[in-house]
Length: 77
Image 1 (tube, rainbow, N blue to C red):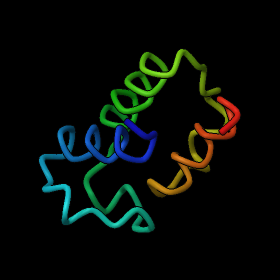
Image 2: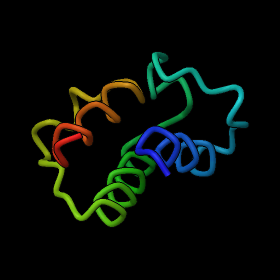
Image 3: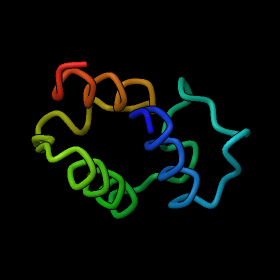
Image 4: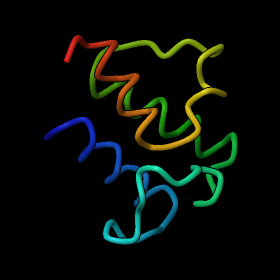
């Protein structure tokens, strides 16, 4: 499963949104991603890809596309 597919699936489950309704360029806050949900999503990515997303970068990851691109960069894709 691609990083994008994995993250979109996690996002849809955490926020109870249908996959087809997700826009990867929309602000995550618009889907109800608060600090608790963001923590859950970050933990899922870190566990799935055996990476560490540093706390200082998290506020910059405002859309699904930015999250996906950051994880791709971390794992060298």
